[in-house]
Length: 143
Image (cartoon, rainbow, N blue to C red; front, side, top):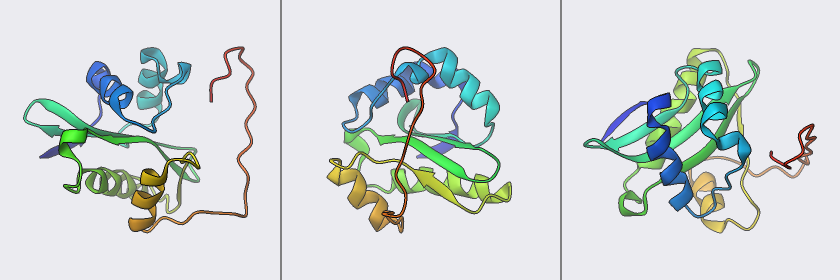
């Protein structure tokens, strides 16, 4: 299994992986132009896992310079329970630490029990002291 930086050329394979992954919610901000801007703004932070020439895992990672943010961690159903998701997260977190960013956040849908169990087992903590609020200046309701 090879882990490498997610590149814009990977978009078609990665979006297909995300579409096939339960618990991943895709919106307008996940269309090719938006993901290309995201990767350009956050170089060296997002990763894919490859089995030969096939992408079987992916994670988006970005930063606001103070905190890191993980999004859309997915591993193909055929490759789960092999530590691929953990390896992708480790790579993303190490890249954040190399930039001096020590804290990272992510969002999980409350009804996604598998994701919540994965993150808890990986040492992440659910927080009850904050409430996510969003503002959308567009007209499509995208997050």
